[in-house]
Length: 392
Image (cartoon, rainbow, N blue to C red; front, side, top):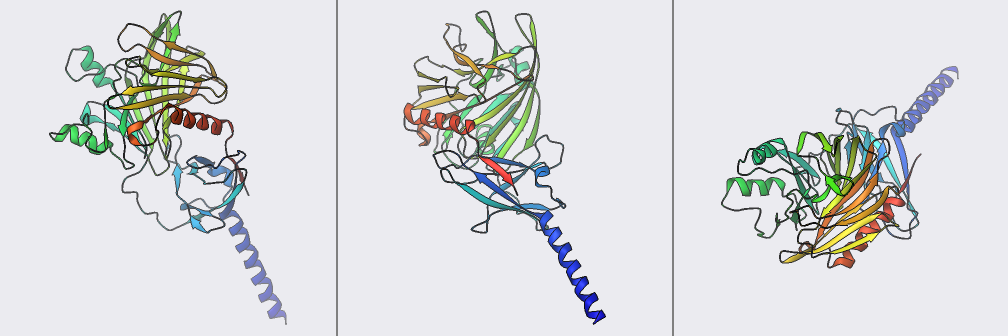
């Protein structure tokens, strides 16, 4: 009898330990949608620390609790220190409902992504661009070698801190393919052979979301980025940091660092700008031939520009979260490439945050100005009403 009691006690202790381990290696995430609209392609970021897991060594697996099917997720190093500090995923959730997901840690290796949907890299073979993309849009901007070439009169240089738009109309990655086409073949990414093209002129304009500082009636800009750092690529997000040399705005010295990210399914990149020397900044959209139509929604803090573009049409936009947009200006001048539609932003703690991007009619994503601005306004509404995540 005594032996049986001892065995029973040992079994009970083992069961308690097992339950305790399960409680610290499995968590539930309850995601709540408070809007009267279905939600998808919005990224939820769950800090690893908030899960309070005893064991975080291994691969994080996220499952739909009801269906018990794995959902696409991404382990995220937010600051590039080599340590995973968050899990990213994009829940599909109905209007005014909530959905439960399960997080576990497994020793099973994850299959490597052959080509991340959200991708960015430095491009030394094309002078020194930095380019980024997802399944809907692509962008690039320019580095110090391109600036030096321009200043020294060397052909092929570019002097601009504006953001270039690459008009893709396929959902697979094109950055590497287009650069190879331009640099190693007789073809060119300036010609559309079915995937899209680069026919978006930036010059010294702000392109799609470059910044400027207004002093009196004049806008001042930084030059090309001086340093870069890729933080992550993956199925949900790519992010990177660009640093700039100190620049002058009519006697005011500004320092600037951009942290840019682009999530799957979004037409807008997120810009987090660290600034010193000013408590306001402006983010702009180039007006090109000045023949487009301006849209502004001050209640939801966004500006938009819809214009004829080649044999199609193009919409660009800036959305400012947190009611940080303090005004706008439709700035038109005869100086080449300096006409821009600006959103004026206040900084908080030396930081300005906004989203900027585009929609190309030929990609079949948007038909007209109304479609584009409906998307932009919905994007702004979702920022004001984020999905609520509770860890259980």
